[in-house]
Image (cartoon, rainbow, N blue to C red; front, side, top):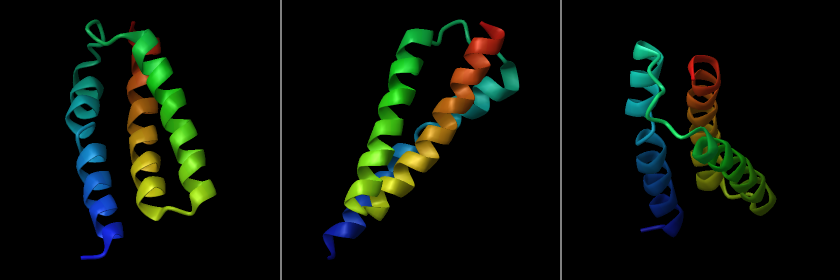
Length: 83
């Protein structure tokens, strides 16, 4: 098995893990139990992982971080908007 496929599987699973939280947050607009500080730090960290993946030309890392960054930004924006 090509080791890059392990990266794609890991990227898919870790990125998909954010979908239930994003869907629930979008539907309910309830962000009280979400830590703003944690999501700010996490979102910035994901952005750096994306840049790192681009520098390495690692498509599994790029894929995972584009998806995760989009979901994290969505949740963070909702947190900032709805408190």
